[in-house]
Image 1 (cartoon, rainbow, N blue to C red):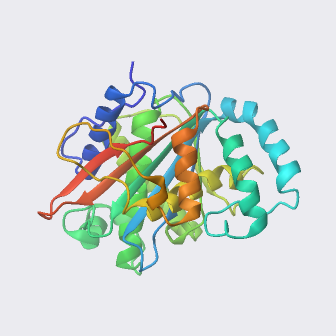
Image 2 (cartoon, one colour):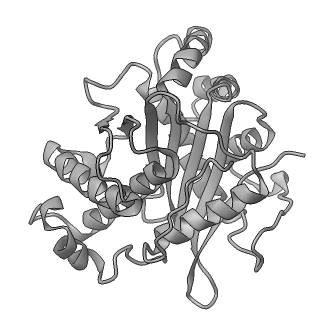
Length: 315
């Protein structure tokens, strides 16, 4: 039985395409995802590629449960005590710092023990607005979700992030399951008012994708919130590493090859960024409890936006 619950409304645009791509990938690889239905769902997310020089944006989500976290936290404490007792955070941008770089293999090995799914959505920056008509149409459709003075770029970012949160919840959560989401503290969520309006927007989109009417609570906080648990930054760091690595790997990984399903060999020696190479090797070689998948939205040579789903598979 498949873990991923695909979106069925083909009028859902890019979300339908991304969802259907993962449906096809899981059908070919039945063990690529793990169920997260037992207990409270816990999501942690981080993002990369927002700077002007980047060709892609990455939105990464770690999806697990409170029960899985309880089993895993002793391993995290052991890692912290041995490798980073001073409390410094693992992050993709700071991996060139010697202490963090030395700790990375042990951190990734520890993360492999956490039962859950690591899903990253990589979006070509040539892809236009997720709403037909652009940010103006988004505000018109959801007038109670945006402040009158908000920038167009922030509108699009909030709409994309809310769309991806809705997609993840629709695909992995069931209606009566409580979920908690911990996000990096970024532009889309940097004020109380934005967070309140974002929550409303994500709710609209989630109910639209799922058809839920009496869903259990979905709560969220940022990593800077005083309410965030002590382990939140380490769990969000997993998403941060994946997002940063996939942005660096965007030019090396296939987008689509003209067939419904495919398998390709990647030459690790061609990857110049050692941080991305280390994380890519971990994804390919890991045999632990954490599963992973990459979803891509890419513009082809004809200018059409197409979706694909893929995962590293070791030899």
